Image (cartoon, rainbow, N blue to C red; front, side, top):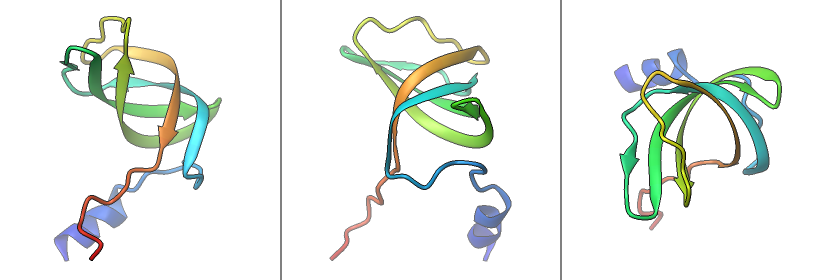
Length: 92
């Protein structure tokens, strides 16, 4: 019951229902400390605008090759490919 209430209270707002958005212009804030791997940098991003329209959503973004230095709390405007997250549960 608690999880259902939380899901209802904090859903993403204003996000399109498309499975993939190939060129999304995002404006938002870096929420987490970026995790740097050998080939990528990954961080949570609070999206405030998507292609110029106001939205409220969280995304896990990855940057591959030649990534700038991201810091928590910074506001960035990025061009990204967005995909709907897939459920990791066993479908069988």
